Length: 163
Image (tube, rainbow, N blue to C red; front, side, top):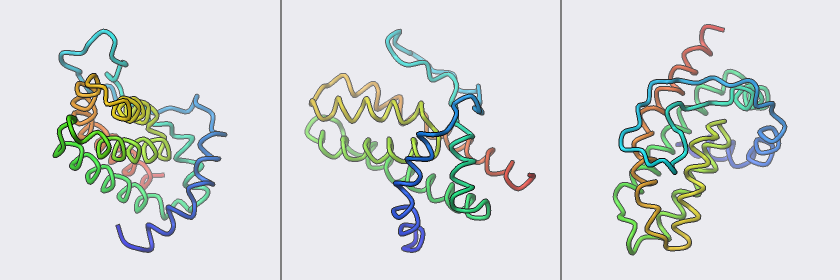
């Protein structure tokens, strides 16, 4: 991510959070192609990834629709970085690192309307802060979601060009 994109994202973050808070959750777009294997009954249902298009529409309104593909690319690159760091650090002994990365994933996901991903990252953040080993299966689950998240946003981005 270049310096200009970082400045835009950091400057607009309070506005983006406000926009996200105001958005109507009835405008959802989902992809139902993720088959969760070995899911624990207590796990959140992540068989679909829902992207709140109202959040993305408000973001596009605030920063311009021409900027959206670049912001989505920056978001996906940021997720790649965070997921790589999480994957490289086992939970035991790295709770602070996992907590920080999960916090960043949570914030990015919520900013871009990926509420399910944000909630899972929030759970991991909380469990890592408590040094709770039950975060480990959730981390594996989070890492398994990356291809689905990328696919969902690439498909959304392709629809931007058609509109």
